[in-house]
Figure 1: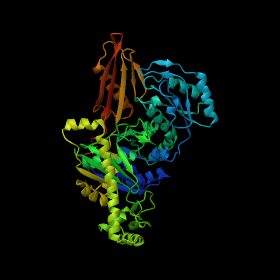
Figure 2: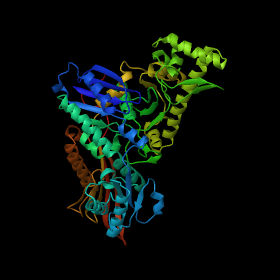
Figure 3: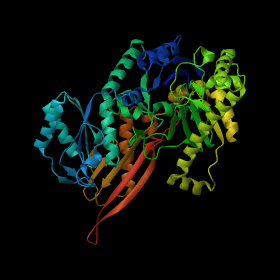
Figure 4: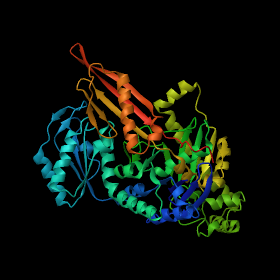
Length: 557
């Protein structure tokens, strides 16, 4: 038995899957101020009459980290940077409080400037004076040599053993210092909140006699064990949109070009499937307008949902703040769902209540109720279509699109729109008709997010950098460095084998052995190191991944 639970802005959904079919679905209102209670209510409803010893895996998609960052409710965090030469240090002052220190590493991992220990101690004293207990440490090129970061860690922990210190080389190993520092900062800021949440959830699951492994859905649509999420909580940001994307993949299971439209109560998440595969954000997830090293689907979220209030002044208005449920479900303010309910006589909830509320609005605006609904519907469909087309434009501007065109010898063409969420049944058929494509509405569309979380497979990505002149390799996922034995004879095949070994070891540590054999090489580059007129060595870059997808047991819902 597999369980998937998705915490949305308005509702939390759950599914119980027995390996062949969904045998139970659950939906509860989300309590954003008490996610633990919401999740456990859904879990308890799912496991009624289910032998808990048959439950093998639980996957959670949660908004916890998103909420902590959006509300700035994480613990006060300081960041200590080792920028080295290059841009003015102030260019990296992206969060406060921010401290800078001397000490630098070059792009090959060689120490250019030693740390000033007294300077680090002075910074530590300032941080202590501010009463801060969380510190993010990031050094330029620390992914090639974490020596400086590790020394800073020891100095800070000696100064105050109770401090929680997070190193950039351990959470974000790819190149790009700005993205690494911001990823490190948000990891440090959210880690305690995540640990508290995870502890409560795992404890509650154990109290119910469930011994199943608990996984968390990441922004890239893959899952990771809960204990790994403890080290990298930021990877769970945007797990909601990832759940809807994977839900779309699970429902469609085709090689067509598809828009996945998750229309919730307050927001709509839009993602693209190109030839059936989710489109990734080429520059990583964006948090507070800053790019990070978090691998993420390309998702656009807009403040428009089934419960978005509607009004009419100089023209149709759709407000962004949810004021409660639709009038047809007992609310006090007419919403988007009420509009579609009246215009197309859908019989959703109390259709007469929808009509009466919109009629009052029409009388106030001195317009016929049919005309009011028509204009409001056009505004909703227009906003959705505009955002979808903007995503197409962004995709077409990516270098990867040019490659796709060459490989496929054709232009990109949309085939269908998959509707997910409670409001999708009302809106998606009309939007698809408006755009000249086919609508896809599945019987499990309303809980597709939870299904996506339930059947998503584990993912893992790492890149190794090998410098045969120095004889050193680095693993950007773990920050691990090591020596290669055959420096002079080392070739690309050896680099790929090393990457496969590193991934297999990491997969074993994260209970992903069953998927390690499916790993694929995604990057293979080599460069000669020239000194004078001679080749003195080679540099290899190899990327390898267990790609996102659906678990082997899932054959369709």
